[in-house]
Amino acid sequence: MKCLSHHNHGHQYCYCHYMKTITGIWIDHRKAVIASASASEEITHEILSNVEKKEGLLETEDHRQREYDGHIKQFYDRVIAAIPSSETLLIFGPGEAKGEFKKQIENSKHDMPVVMVEAADKMTTAQIMAKVRSHVTKQ
Image (cartoon, rainbow, N blue to C red; front, side, top):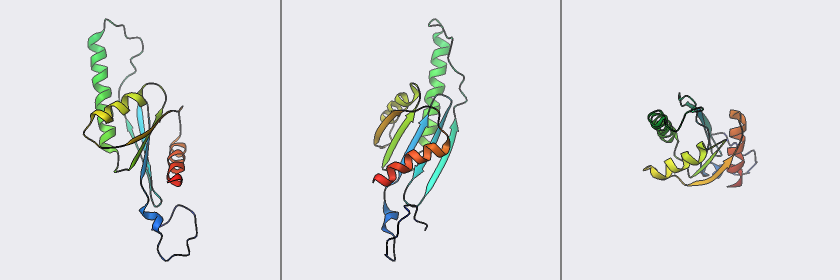
């Protein structure tokens, strides 16, 4: 097993492999990027919502709004189902989606401790992983 913590132990076995897994999710209403990291492994996964923007909807268009909200809820459920087993969950992204997603997790049957919700502009997958990796090294 390759140790990603870039240190020289002097031990025959690297105990850092037993460190916690941290998962970060960058999310907006169009897509989610899931990035998980531990001392020994990094995994990324992207999920598209396939939901059109709701811009320009009038309040009288209740049916279209409910339909949109239902699609977003299904998207959040798909993202929750794709989250690997983690001890720590970080949520970041632009707009309202990150807060909505956090509420969806809290209302789900999954026991995932969300330790951070933070605003973040558009990020590359490498930037998302770097953010998650920075939390792994703090553990």
